[in-house]
Amino acid sequence: MLKCSSLKIGRCCDHLIYEAFGRRLFGIRAFLALPASRFQHVLNDTGQTSSLYKGCPLARLSVVWRGEILAKVAQGVFRELHPESLVHEPDPGLRIDGVRRSRRQAAFDWQCDDSRVECKNSQLTWQRHCWRFRFRRIKFDLFDELVLVLYTPSNLYIVQHDRHLGLTKSDVGSARDECGVQLFGPRKCLC
Image (cartoon, rainbow, N blue to C red; front, side, top):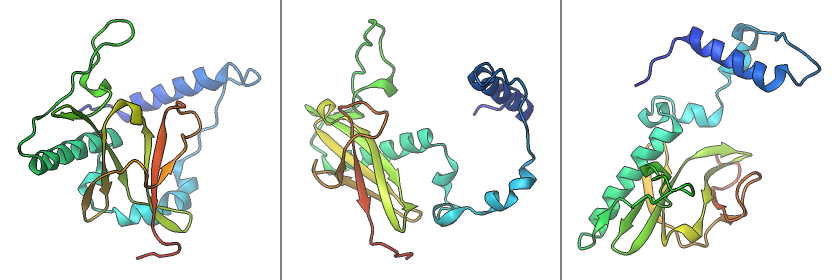
């Protein structure tokens, strides 16, 4: 695990802010730093989603690490459901410049016999009066099967997607060949 001092992180953030904005915004070279105590009311308002996941071990992990763990869990379940099949890591292939890709840069998460399997995960979140799961940056042309891991405070639900349920167009700023999946609960239901 990486350890960084808050002083080093603070200096790094100051440098990034200066590089991003300091030279372009009318020659401004100084920034106003306000203490967090002035915004305590904002920091204390954790919202429905944060209070729901309070104390949940997976909630303390970064999105990247949580995704890695949930993909491994899903792959294990997939292996159990397909005991006669050969389930293995994909060959990541080469980048456009000829350099070998890392495992995380593979086009899909694992292979089951000749089928390419992609795994996406989403945390249950409160959004505009309803609960939802949102899966982003899905490139259906790069894999054959899509496995979704729905992460709630008490359970993991692992499902095989049918390539139709909850499909959305690509997000602003994403590639044209990407789409998403959104699954919504009933409106105004806090249960």
